[in-house]
Length: 438
Image 1 (cartoon, rainbow, N blue to C red):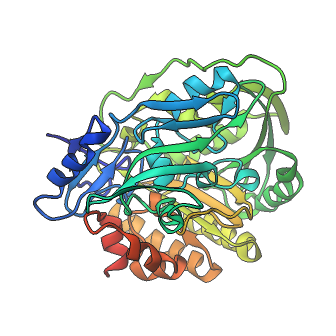
Image 2 (cartoon, rainbow, N blue to C red):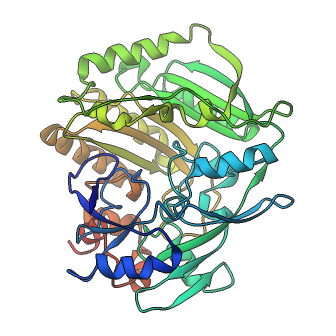
């Protein structure tokens, strides 16, 4: 029996993985996993950061070997696949045929089942919403032996609860998604250096509606008049060019470092270096989709650079009316905390509604940062950030979370009770136990 961890390695709670290789063996693996305590949880490729992918019982059903493409209509772009298929596997077959994932997170190593369970979003939320908007139907197996198809018209309650439902409604056996047509696998990108947070909002208001993709890297160590400085990047699929699957050389972090690479001194230097790397105010280029969407995927096992204690990601979204001041307060709190993040992503989310009950994105501004796990420092900082987000009327992303209080979760996601009513009693995560029972 192998063990698995969440991507952030925090909390460090190894899970016993009961591997399922065939759809008709899923129930047997599930029954075996839940035999001792009565509950288990599905586990894909382990790309969730916190404890939403960790079973309360420590027993998971690993669906990664369920990685078969079942059918594809390359005229309409409708693809059906098993839940363990990774986004990379979908791209490998879809891009040469002129199709692209309509929504993609920052890693192509997430699975199809995980993308649905966490209702992932990407750089084009303002245009196409979340991944769940492009899910047509899926098959759901329950612990009572029932199995049924879910779509907006069939079992609509389970359809809504499963999208963004953190894997709690049943085991997804297959899913059907709608792909997006493209003419080239290249992306036309324009990068604009901005000097402070006000410039970010001005650029976002001016450019978001003109481009498919929009996102910014922000220097979370800057303060004063430079608070929130960074690089704004907009992109669109090229109208001409090859339809080629990207093949980048990959490197691997060979072992977990004894201490994290990032501290206040290295962070300040790295942020300054990255900001100054773009010497001109505006630069245009044409890059592969792989380099644009998945820059971190070229460094395998990059989570090891955070050391044995792991790391936590803090991702929040705050509504438009409070976004400017709340984001300013968050960045100021981080800059003065003695810690920080090199991977700091800032973007505005659109008003496109997800079909999922517990989908994270809402109209407003989202900020995502990775922090090395230092118990005392993170506890104090996250309490301050939580207060800012709470007062601003925002919320935290469950798929990335390992600390959110039950009170904050229940207030920010009032539809949690509808999910609880449809939750399969044989599925329970550490996140759900932590946020709904305390």
